[in-house]
Length: 157
Ligand SMILES: CC(C)(COP(=O)(O)OP(=O)(O)OC[C@H]1O[C@@H](n2cnc3c(N)ncnc32)[C@H](O)[C@@H]1OP(=O)(O)O)[C@@H](O)C(=O)NCCC(=O)NCCS
Image 1 (cartoon, rainbow, N blue to C red):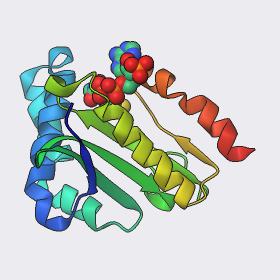
Image 2: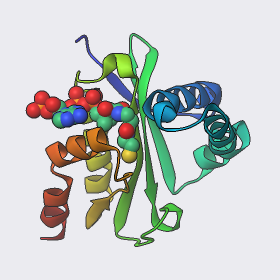
Image 3: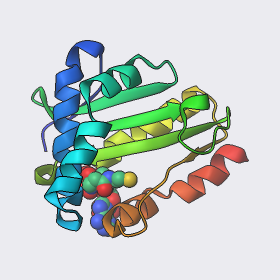
Image 4: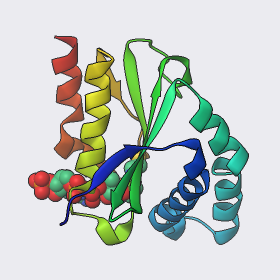
């Protein structure tokens, strides 16, 4: 595939961030949820106010994957107290990696994942962690492929 650009999301791209967040979440989970529950979740989790706060957070960062300036996926990483569970100052959380269905299997997820590892190295993090729904088998296979657990060992050695 033509070259994919991975670029940090800025506040002026708030609406694009909301759009890709809602779209990829819907593509991933709508078959497991009622429309009503999905809409409630989307409105709460990806409201403009919430995303604005997250974008302004110095302990979080969003990156877009772009193909010909079209947003086709995104990454969210959290540091320090903004991590959702483990609040270790020496760790980094990958909270979200989402790629539009149309572009799955084209190494976009891998590029976003590589970006998270690059950030972890820059910050000299001891390890990278993430949470994934136990029924999200596709994502689990992807993370296994990325060898996240082995990277934890590399970083701490
Ligand atoms: C998980 C996800 C980000 C993977 O992105 P992707 O762009 O399709 O993955 P890539 O093309 O970069 O794949 C990288 C490697 O992982 C493997 N891989 C990706 N998805 C896989 C799957 N479902 N099963 C097995 N291997 C998989 C690829 O084969 C590839 O390995 P290879 O280099 O040996 O060919 C993407 O499927 C997605 O957005 N899913 C929906 C959102 C989601 O569930 N996110 C995680 C929430 S925690």
